[in-house]
Length: 359
Image (cartoon, rainbow, N blue to C red; front, top):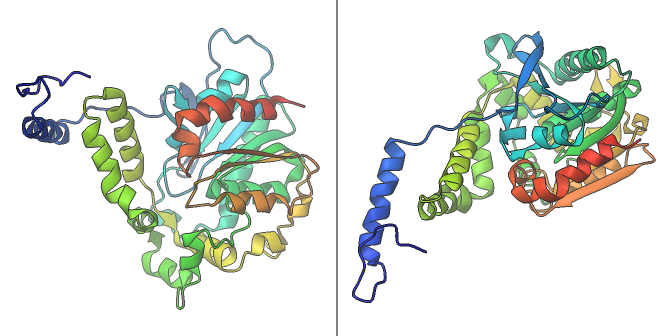
């Protein structure tokens, strides 16, 4: 490799001290004049607005023909923006699904404010998701549509499919906590700490801020979040593609959104502390959520190194469902790597899209 203009020693090798100073200057210039990056670039339009929520409908790629495309609704979690599903060209779940022939919709929850501080899980599942599903059904003309839920969005998708199975054709659960109890999950361990009271936290904040969640996620792997990723950036400052991808991920991390207190408390208490979803005792608006009512084909989509939602929390959850067809897709990736690693887009997402298209 070239030494990028760094002074050389007598033998032609780069002077390590001069190279160090060059990189420091380069890092300072990067910090003061970072390149601008765009996210969520796949063309789309808003087909539904409700409160802060927008429902996106993505454009069909040109030259793909006019055959009817099966609709799929992507439901992301509440604490980050959903453009992680469409991070950049070439690293986009939305792009992968469109390329295979699906008609793609995505829920953007927006950023809640004080007006939304009392929203409950029922409001999201039987309110917002129900309205989005009905809108997709209306536009597509289909009685049943495909659902793909990511993280907590997958938990809500599971609830919805159990309560409204007549509207769901197939369901994919991507790093979704369904069976919450796992000793491999620090979130589960922390939720069982003596004196931990999610409702007290909810009442204190009203809207639980993104900094609260980010600090917890940082503690899952402090060496990576506090040191390794910045060291890697310093070593790759000459690689524009690496730098731009790094900045997109940082933008996504820093653009976290708050969560309504009652929703947070209900997920922690009924999910992590009591594991009520697989027990069939979690109720929404008085109706118990019975996973055996889920009889449509289902699939788990998991990362084998996920330290936020370990793979077993999704895979084991499928065991309680009444579906005859259960598929499992896995890749050596973390929670976010499922949607951002190039290997996932090369090896896994085409297969997932094919599964949704079949039948």
